[in-house]
Length: 259
Ligand code: PAF
Image 1 (cartoon, rainbow, N blue to C red):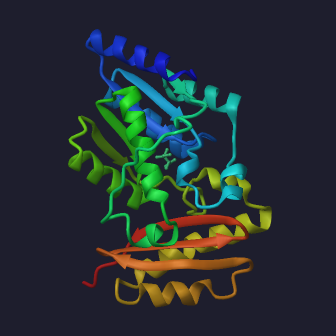
Image 2 (cartoon, rainbow, N blue to C red):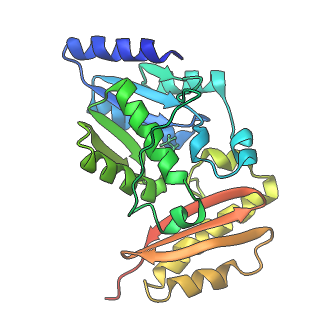
């Protein structure tokens, strides 16, 4: 389904029949992490809508936006197999003269927000639009994007959105790399280095909050093609982002507490 009006109509019809609606917002290129979100959504509501929309306003680089992986037909099948009732693939969610934004100005400031000006404003705005169109009672997000989850929860609270936010733990590949559509763009060598970066984050988090930042910097030294963007501890969690070539990867882990 691509038409906003059709999506609104379908959702309204379900609700009139007393059925509940869950939304899983994605940017498409669905992977097993998304499948887990869709399955959980199916347990939380009668109807599941998966949105697949590469939202231009949350990208800080045009090239990154243009190169974001797209998997049209494969996404339709994956969503259906995972139990979605509708894969909503709007062409655009912005009128040419769109001039309304949703901006959270506290939780979106540090970590990824400090490095990607306007990113969380784009995310909050598009998620609000999706809530307006799909009218879900519940929306399911992956904890991989932890700061995004925090921003959305704050937005929902502050703007009195009648939707419950459910977060699912990060789903990882066998070598510990968080699943992400961006992983598809890694070369075989970059993919191997990505596994070592994920291992380094885990090891560094074991060093405890006070030492994990230094430990991660140490562990990442010499990994080919990898550039650390930031590493920070916030409320006992180690957060970091790196670039492997042009691909940006993020991860976070709870720091081990001293016993
Ligand atoms: O996490 C994502 O894929 C995106 O940021 C989201 C929530 C679908 C908004 O475009």
